[in-house]
Image 1 (tube, rainbow, N blue to C red):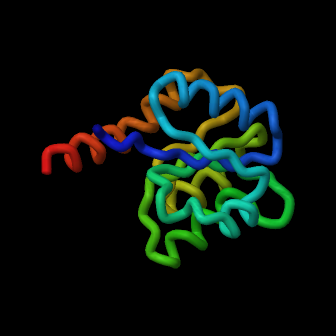
Image 2 (cartoon, rainbow, N blue to C red; image 1 turned 90 degrees about the vertical axis):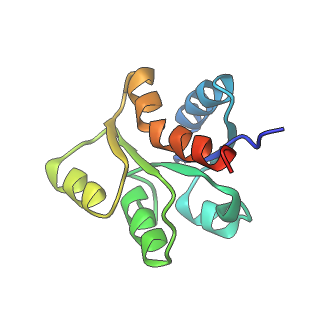
Length: 129
């Protein structure tokens, strides 16, 4: 039985966590949600996370700061940054740090699904082994 990719959703807005989580679960992904970057880092879910979706504007640590921290620790999982307050500097910083996608809320579900295509391709390659 194939192991479903596990996506961690990190956003301080409960309605956003719920909406994205419900969408991804309906597509067959396993989902864990966190209200902050710190909660995610304190959890035991990092090692099993196949992809991170994180908001930019959160208390204490932003999604971009989390991305940079994880990349500095050698974590290379696909990373989708989402925000309701886009600006070119933040987008450039996120993409420069290795974000897979930078999406502006509200975003079309198909745009998010396209951002997850590299995850599907990684999973397909792993199932060929």
